Image (tube, rainbow, N blue to C red; front, side, top):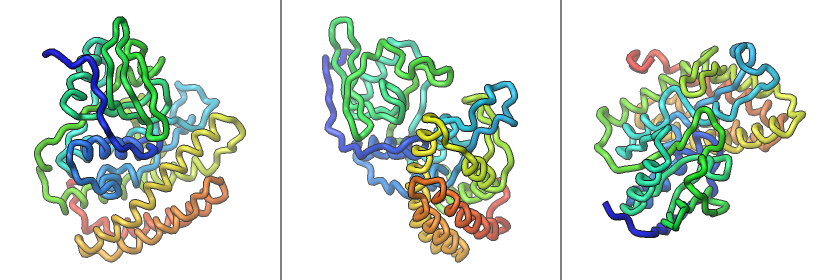
Length: 315
C-alpha cells in the first residue's frame, strides 16, 4: 500500500487527564473523529475507569524497591479490562499492540491515519496519554504529530516512544468501529457494577502487565491517603491521581443516577449522591482526599446493598 507523504487530521482534543480516565477520553475523541456519538461519562463508568482504585504497597511486592508507595502504572490498568469492556459496551473496538518493530509501528500509524482514524498511546516525549493525529514521511525521519489536548508537538518514531519503559514498548492503540456488544446493555451494566463491588471491598489484585500487586478499592484509597507527599514524585502522582479521580467520581454521580432508573435499583441513586459528594471534596489537598474517603465508604456501602441482585456470573 502506498501511503501519502503526509497526513494531518483535524481533531478536537480536550486536555487529557492521566491514567485510565485519560485513556477512555482519548478513545472517545478518536471515535468522535470517526463519527461516533460518545457519552464520555457513561464510557468511563462502563469501562470501570471512573470507579477503580489501585494503590501500590511495598509489603505486597517484596521483590520490588520498597522505597516507594505508589505506581503510576496502577492508574493505567484495570483488571476489569478498560479497553475490552469499552468495546463490548460501545461497539467501538480499541485494541492495543505492544512490542511491534519500529517499522511495523510506522506502517500501522500511516495506515490508520490515512483512513482518518486517530491513534492513542502514552509517552511520545510526554508522560501521559496522547493522541496521534498526523505524520510526515521525511528523509531519515518518521515524524508523527501528537497531542495531549494542552500541547501539540512532533516526535520521531524511530526513538522509543515510551522511553526505557519495561512495560510499554512501541505501545499503540487503534480505534475502529466494530460490532455491537454480545450482551444487552443492562447485562453489561450489571457486570461492571458487580465487578466494582468486588473490587471495592478487595484486599489484593495482581497486574500481569506490570508484574506487581496492588491494593484495590477502599483499602487502596486508604493507602493513598497515608502518603506523606514529601517528595516531588509522590506529589506529582497524587496530583494526577486526584485529577482523574475527581472526573471519574463526577461521571459516576451522573451515570449511576441514570442506571438506577434503568435497573430499578434506588440504592444506585444513593451511591450516585455519595460519589458526587466525594468529588466535591477532591480539591487537590490531602485533607480533601481524606474527607472524600468517608463519602467513598458510603457510596460502596450502597453498592454492596445491591450485590445479591446482580448476576453471580460477573463475580
